[in-house]
Structures are given as C-alpha cells and as structure tokens.
Amino acid sequence: MSVLSAWYLNHIHRANDPEWASRFTFLLKRIFALVVIAIVLALTSVTLWLAFTRSVYLVLAFCAILFVGIFLPYALATPLLYPRRVQPTLIPDALGLTRWETVRFFSPDGVELKGWFIPPDPQSNGATLVLVHGLGANRTQLLGQAAMMIARGYGALLFDLRNHGTSGGTVTTLGYTEAEDVIGAVNYLLTRVEIKPARIGLVGYSMGGAAVLHAATRLPNVKAIVVESTYTSLEDNITQGIIAKTGLPPFPFAPIMIWFGEHITGLRIHQIRPIDDVAHLKQPILFIHGEQDKIVNVSNSQRLYAAANNPQGLYIVKNAGHAELQRADPLGFERYVLTFLERTLRAETLAPLPMALALRQTSTTQ
Image (cartoon, rainbow, N blue to C red; front, side, top):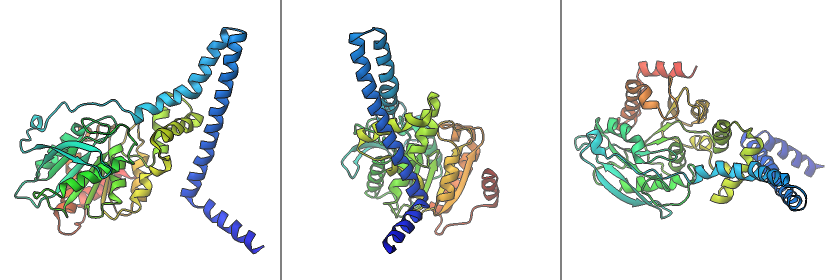
C-alpha cells in the first residue's frame, strides 16, 4: 500500500505542476497528430488504389485528403523554418551614423554571423547594446532604435541571425539555436576595447526577444534586457498567431505543423519557452508590446512580465501592431527605453523608476 500511496501522491503532485501539465497535454496532442497523419496516409493509399480501379473522381478526393492532411501543415511550417532571406538595403550612413564598421564573428556552435558595430561615444561609460531582429528580417530592422541609442552615446552591435541576411546557417529554430548567435555577439563585444564588459545590454524583437531571453540564461554578466513583441512559448504563438491567420482550426493542424517542425529541426517545441527563461533571469527586463498586435497577442508580454524574476517595466504601446512600436509612439518609446537604459546601464546602482513613467507603467497593466 505504501508504494501505491507514494506513486499516487507523486502523480497528483506532478499533475498540479503547470509546466508538467502543459507538456503532458502537448504529448497527447502530438500522439493524436501522429494518429491523424497515419490515418491520412492510409486513406490516401486506399483512395489512390480505388482511383486506379474505379473512378477519376477519387483522384480528386485523394489530392484533397493529401493536401489538407499533410501538405497544408507542412506548407505552414516551412516559411517559419526557411524564411526568405532579405538582404540589408540600408547602411548606417542613411541614418546619419558615420562611426561604424562591418564585422564578422562566429556563434559558439560555429555559424558565421555578419553585422555592423558602432562603438560607444568615447566620452561615455562604454555601455553598448546588442540588437537582435525578428523572423524573416535582418540587421536593418532595429537600425532606427540603434540610432536613437547611439545619439545618447551608447554603442551598438546589429547583426543578421543565422539563416537571415548575409549570415550563415540553413534553418531557423524561432529562438532556440538563435540564442547561440546572441552569445556569439556578446563574445565579440568582449574583444572590443571600446566597450565596458560590465555594461552590455540586449534588445530583442519578436523571435529575437526569445533568442535574447534564452541566451541571457547563459550570460549572467549582461546588465539589462529589452524584449519587444515576444511570445511566451512557441506552441502558443503558432496556435494563436500563425494558425489563426489562416482561418484553420488550431487542432489538429497546429500539432501536425509542429510535428513537421520538430522533425526538420531535431528540436522539441517545449524547449522554446521564453516564459520559463524569464523566471530564471536576475537582470532587469523591460517588456514592450503593441496593443493591437495580431501576430503575437499583447497578453504574451503581460504574462512574461508576471513571470519574470526581475521585471522593471511593461510598456504597452497604444494603437501599435506587431512591427510598429517605435513608429506608433516615437516620443514615448524613446523616453521609456532610454530611461530604462540610463538607470540600468549608466547608473552605478539600479536607480528608481521616475514617477511619471511608473504611473504610465501602472496604467498599461490595468
């Protein structure tokens, strides 16, 4: 009886653990996806056989079953893992930045990465930001934000993530292996005499935010983090964002789509959970999100803020979509971000948030 009682108590304890429950639920969905794929393959085989022996209309049925059951989820997964490469079309000169250079470095797992380095003002304290773009973009995506920071004396490193822009790599993992790229960028900064190793900050947008949070768990010396429009977990984002845009029901299409993604990348989707990463980070974090974001719902940043170990601000930009944060409220965006950086990267100790911004932060979370 004691062994059975221990097993029962342990089972009840694990069932009450939200993370375990989430993974158990996903395991059931994954099993169902495999069953659906098996059924689809069986039906298509039978339909194909009947098509050659009975009627041409069954050929159309075969194509429809195959398309809906397999090709459609695969087609949805492919652009996420193999986004079309977009080459940088601007250079920092276009924004009035003249002190910059093209740089090349490697991630810890050997992927060649290319970007731009703008050193901090020699009269400043050497504080420098690594800015990390989102899915399907390149280093120019955050060039406007970099210019805003550089005008205040900060240094900046912008680079193309793997399988993006001019960097190496052949597959995208939506934040997991991209964390290696962020670590490579920080390691590169540590070789530059212009920067202060104790005054490095990270800025990540969308997928770049997921990469930044995952990398920061291995970068304890990073002093501050800004995360923009980032998801709590990849599974939630696929269900709420990508699938929702197609009009298809999340179940069973999301599990089948995830099954393809996992087998292409060799990863498991529960490995990409920024909401787990923030709970382990000691660095101060500023979360920013567009109120009208249709791709990654604003609730993602609200949940990340609530789960974070050291959250310092949640700035919800009114009337802003997924890629419109700075453009929707340029003055507010600049004031909030620069205030956060001043008190985290410039101050000797973590300074209190100014009252005006504290009131604004409170109003955005209601």
